[in-house]
Length: 147
Ligand code: HEM
Image (cartoon, rainbow, N blue to C red; front, top):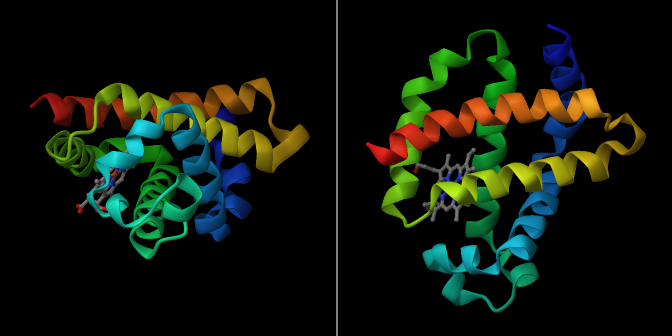
């Protein structure tokens, strides 16, 4: 319950500005693994990561990812209701060539974004609470990926 409070409180303001925070997250992701950029078919239209991250198609995916996180935060009390959606989402990413290890890297980028936006409010318990929630999401996506 304490974990849920930490997540909800920290997401309250971040969730209102999904695109800018999502851009911080994906900028970090493409720093950690630039090859991920090439998995987006529409990335052929742009040169480097910053340029891609300002293209409408990329911003749409950034928004989609943030909406999934938003859904997880809204469903902290009943995350299992997202199971089918997440299984399906994992399967779709398998189809577009995303490896499951990359989901973990998105998690690292999420923590990076939280740390840079929350500053001193980014504490060890908060980090752990987010990791726990994100690992539930990734676990369902990974099961769907492998199906
Ligand atoms: C769709 C790539 C991670 C959420 C897609 C698509 C691509 C893609 C190529 C299809 C085109 C599109 O809709 O833009 C990636 C890559 C990732 C990644 C390279 C890096 C690991 C994630 C994560 C989430 C997510 C972690 C959510 C937690 C979505 C959603 C869609 C999508 C909601 C739309 C699926 C649909 O059409 O039903 N992704 N993705 N993605 N992605 Fe990702």
